[in-house]
Length: 231
Figure 1 (cartoon, rainbow, N blue to C red):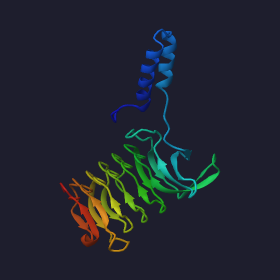
Figure 2 (cartoon, helix red, strand yellow):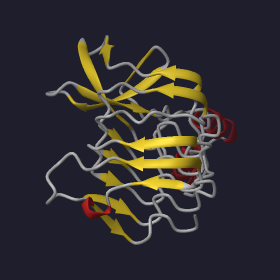
Figure 3 (cartoon, rainbow, N blue to C red):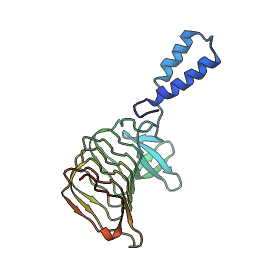
Figure 4 (cartoon, rainbow, N blue to C red):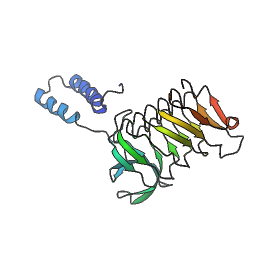
């Protein structure tokens, strides 16, 4: 299915195809009931919810989790809005466990109506498309312990002003900040040993038309292609 399709519609169409094939003489009214029921199914992508924020459990053993989207389908518009504060830890009433929040999951805030978000220092991963197309976020502080920023993590968002890539960050994905409005960028020197270079993928900052200043240590950064294409 393409990105514009609703996941429940996809599952519904497959189910109905099988239903009609196996039971061609089924009462039409009964089938209509199933159609209405299935089109209202939401496929959850989270393990638990707390204070309006959805979470996926990453590890029961380590008691870690990540912020998730409400729906288990790629590139479905996120339901988050307004200003959101992500806590360092969150308690799940079902498992009776307190989890440390260590990541922002894939597409968690994709195309959301967020006006701002505060992330704790416990965050170490910002996954693919986590904040893609977030038009309400102009200012954003990347936590100092972030090690991984996935493909298109902030692309096509309204990020502006100055931004710092922390020295613990070892990976910047393709188009991670592409088509944003950032004006200044500082990529802090790699925290790890010089033999382990930070990977910056092609187009990581491509088409940032207002980007006028970049500060980085090229000797410690492994560029795969041109990360500043179109700037």
